[in-house]
Image 1 (cartoon, one colour):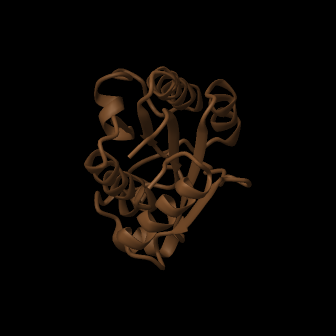
Image 2 (cartoon, helix red, strand yellow):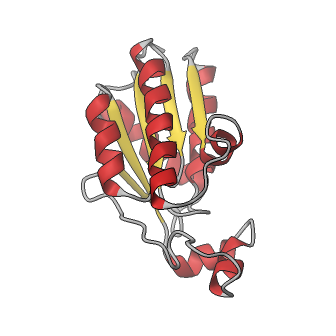
Image 3 (cartoon, rainbow, N blue to C red):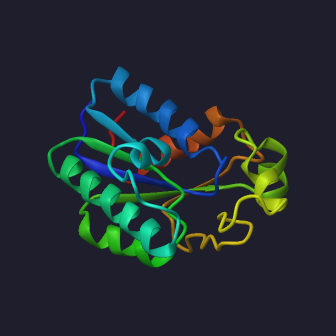
Length: 177
């Protein structure tokens, strides 16, 4: 499989399927011989952004750091994928403006499904007031208005969502099947 470096930026609320779909795409790309790196929000916070909190300023710094690394990777022929909530549109747009081949993929999922799914129990804690500033509950999530890719993880299996992402990447000329 031929490919050029690009950044695939997954955004969406906690539990919306960003990492799950990114992992499916990663496997498919690697099986085709591509160089791929995923910058998962939780992993980045443990390593690259250790010590940052969840204030708006800290979240912005975290997303800028992820964007910087994605830009370095993609301009060097690697397919970089970010799977971080990245709740604020202005920072996503700022990152987009710094990366040549940037594709935004919005993992749309309604709040009821996310609360029902809640793999980490975070929504229950946030709704009970045990977590303050939780994105989607008492901190805003600004959905993208013009994402190149949108999938609804409440209505689709992870594999169906990944197929939507894959087909759109082919259509955009980012990957050649």
